[in-house]
Image 1 (tube, helix red, strand yellow):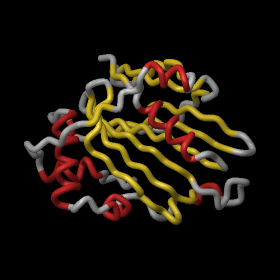
Image 2: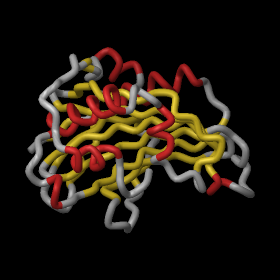
Image 3: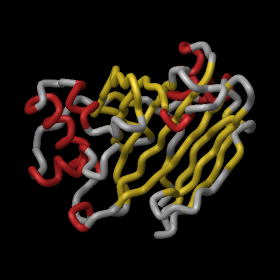
Image 4: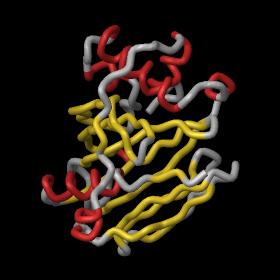
Length: 214
């Protein structure tokens, strides 16, 4: 997504006092057991500690980039699955609450952008994402009493040219929240031949385990 992410575009316009009715998608213990999700604890460089539950087959791989907190993944001849956790901080994000920023995004998307998914699509790097389709954008979610955005998209990733995955459609679930003055984005991406229904259930169950501890 472009540097001027949707949530920070909203910050420039100020916050709204209108709130949607939030949908709690915190993962149930039954689904945690069904997908065999196990806890991983993550600490950011500002002292923020949070946890996420993921399958054991996803291996942690820290990327040495300022915006990256950590990542998990698995790669085989048939598929690639990654979970990428990024952060972003700006001066304007320091004095705004998690709920205020999500409320403002909801109101901008629904009232000013008329829930037009093309507006979201325009914010994403077209050079990387070919045949891009944003199929869902939700700005009214709660996970463990914290407010989140969800964006779902399909695309062909140009970075996979000349690999066995060239031309295969990627499915990308992105969850965004705000904590301790930073925006956190959790991207859950699948490349390869797969059952869409199975991945949707897994991705949403993983996202529903996100929990900030301090």
